[in-house]
Length: 280
Image (cartoon, rainbow, N blue to C red; front, side, top):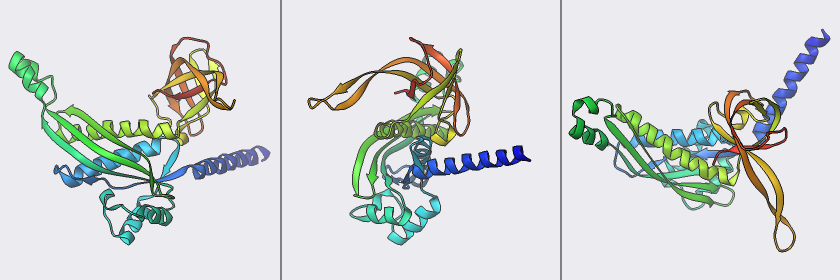
């Protein structure tokens, strides 16, 4: 019976701890993209919005505002997409949804065309070579803003683009949106970079103290860094710490509060306490 109660108490601690960690994350409202490209207006906007939502969620630093909250606030404020967000509406929107940040954007280019590489291969090698090349190439380009809803000021604004090929045109376009969203993710990671700590090393198997609750994904590559001497400004204040990359890890298994990784490369000794970050 005592063992049973211990298990229940441990489970409750994990649940409360997980909820507290989730609550501590800043909430981001990912607005439906405005599409001014003239191509397949609804579908391409839906694709890019979906991909941007995924990267915010998987960043590990933020949580995403619920769609029902967004839909209600959008109806109340009278707009359908990012292009209608202006003036003091960012602040009002944040107050209505509880979001500290907003992602808004405008798609300026979207297209699916016959893959020119396939045509070139066909001209040289004929059908025998052509059949190994994807038929379509999808492209997308957008301007995306990350806004602080407390002030209405841009934290950053960036141009993202992507291209991909596939034998299915819609898949090619979706993959292009995915590539573009990854570029936004890299900008997002600069303002609140992910880091973890190695808690155990067993040969080439490494355990880190961050998991799916922090956005870690199976298959991604992480860098191991060794911290060195502090860097100080003229007033003697520490403004940074020197970091040297000593290896890379591949995430093999993800749990809510930790992940198991495999050493991919190393240039130094990997020990407990080393810092792990996403590969830049």
